[in-house]
Length: 469
Ligand SMILES: Cc1ncc(COP(=O)(O)O)c(C=O)c1O
Image (cartoon, rainbow, N blue to C red; front, side, top):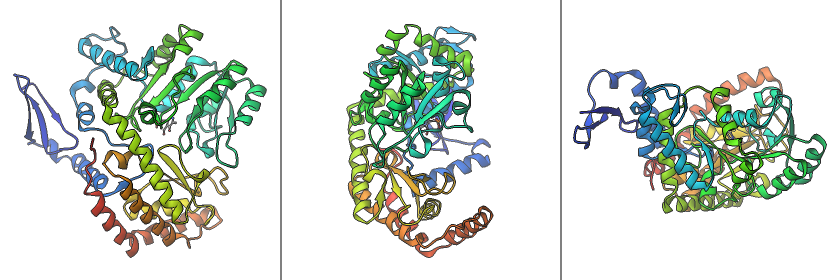
């Protein structure tokens, strides 16, 4: 026997690699499986199976990606880069990281890749660190209109504090206001313009961003965290011909482990041949220490999976399901921000029913077995804490094998829940809101209608495995 790995999806089992290289699955004995943590993981697994996940930034990994995450690779320190490490003993880890880099390069047809960022937020900070000095100007989409915190959200974030953050928004039709992007860019001469989205349901028009970036001499950074899988599957415009630097988390539509990758395009390298090295140095020693080698291996596996023709079908189905879900919700009288979606996600606009209803709807839906997240709408009348929208998306349900008929059913359940709680009134004073919400949640936990729905949801969800090709 060489190694024993706990398989996170089969907690009572263990993979044994025999001396002859054969792998055997055996039942686990001993105290490890009795640890309270294992029982809690099992409960989380049951929750994921019984419920329907609509959070557009979440996804389920293949059993192979899950397996490598619990291997001996996390025992090793590998500060530095392949074949140039500060620690000895990295002969194998070097090959693993190089394979991950080569696969991602091939997938996107790009000359430079770094797979070490711990996650999307440090990856964005590393890009800024490589491209700007503190105090220089960064332009990104407003958080309330679909951008991400790390795109320069003012005051409370590092990106908003260390750089002079200028934020652009969307037009009344909820599409990015390129006239505003251009005016702001000409006025503030940003060093970096970020084109990226977290709750923006339409495609990112990288060609338009490029034009403006060229007019003011800015770097164009494409944060495709949400849409990587769609880009790979040709369901979303590619940033490769337009951006200088591309960042993506690896755990969303890419369907890999929690992590991120930074890529530099030919265009970026043409502008600055040292750009790759600058990104490498921004990661280590700039921001991070040793890479998470098990995650690196997971990225390598996910990149191989994303190169298969089945992955293109997966991307297509995400879009088909998103269109079906949007159509079904609209036909039941709900409003969507911008009237629909061109991607994997959409935001239900509850402000037309009652401002601030996102909190109650999200909680009640979870009791009914469907989890999503409350979100601001572009014309938010309340606040990010009590927003008027609900963000939903189809990557996870598509991974489980759900199709348009299930989207129709899910839309029906969502509508029933919205109608069930639409009479709720959020008190205007902050103090009253807190006690109101405690009572609302206690009431929802016992609500007969929501509990009945949760049984129906469980019945459907349990028919679908967590991961299916
Ligand atoms: C567009 C975008 N960029 C960056 C991030 C940050 O990623 P992480 O949560 O892995 O730090 C997110 C996360 O949701 C995102 O949506």
